[in-house]
Image 1 (cartoon, one colour):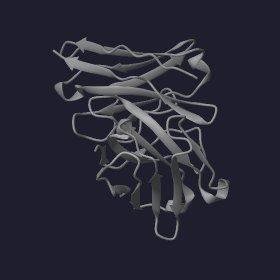
Image 2 (cartoon, chains in turn brown, yellow):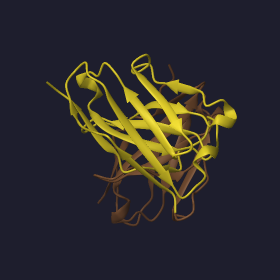
Image 3 (cartoon, one colour):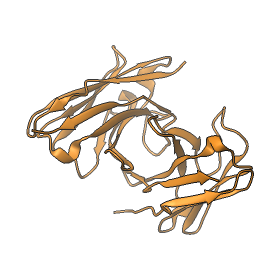
Length: 106
Length: 123
């Protein structure tokens, strides 16, 4: 079965750029979606189909996907960005989530 | 405004059954595929299953961990998606979320999520 690998945690200084990776075999050939989840809340879609932002998501959130790695980039990180982030793809007829990355804003 | 509201979560004994509901509003429910995703306490997101819109056969897909025990269905006249869970195990304990896909078929993201309902399987 297809697997997605994310770092358990990423730290970023306030106002700096955070990068969260999602690794998978030839993931560049798939559409990758990213979700943000804050404690006690439902996930929120922040990037869809590699690099598209839903309405209401700040331009500070961006995504890319190539080769074996997809990347979520958060520019000018704010305290409110502190959350768990999950990548997601479809593999054949099943949905796969990455294990999640806890983003800490210092 | 799109809204998804899950209900039906409860404390249930191992081996018993439970049915969850996801009531949708703010969009034409019949046009969209729906999915269920769960999250065990302190763990990550785990996909449970997916149901396409009737225009695409209303067919379903399941995670290996629940296949044969869980069944997804939908009542488009009521704008409700259901998750029937049979032969429940302690490892099914989780918050269960329903989520909408932006199309009637698979391959897309989940653009709206409900707030979740807690299922606890314990004797």
